[in-house]
Length: 172
Image (cartoon, one colour):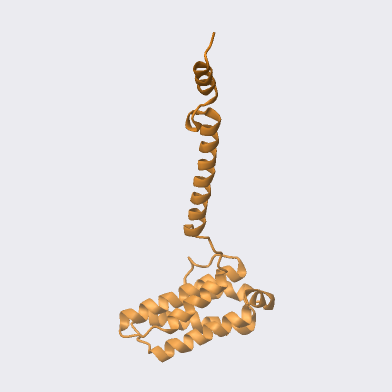
């Protein structure tokens, strides 16, 4: 028969199995570690991922005008560069405001196009902005920083007059 030492050994051998060797424990440990690693990776992703912010075109145009107002004209090249930027900003505004692409048109073509769409009171401002700037851009005329500020004020006035009220309040 079995003596008492063998019975204890048999019970010990049958019932004692280290936790790390049991399949259920290993599977549970793998699942818990996977969840923890996933949570940590998700938190890192949330912290360092860049959120895409949608900027309204009118806000972007206003920022461009503000950056232009800080420019100081020193020579003819600066003058040409700034006034090409002025007309580009105006064309972007007209494109966004009237849902028509005028960016590829010349300044004269934009004015001709504007007679059909832009209100009559603002046509004179647009003509002054685009046609007067043509002589600055192409005829080697140098403009002072003060004159640039006047053009920027004209542009802001034009934008204010032609932008519908509900769009202005929507941005605020």
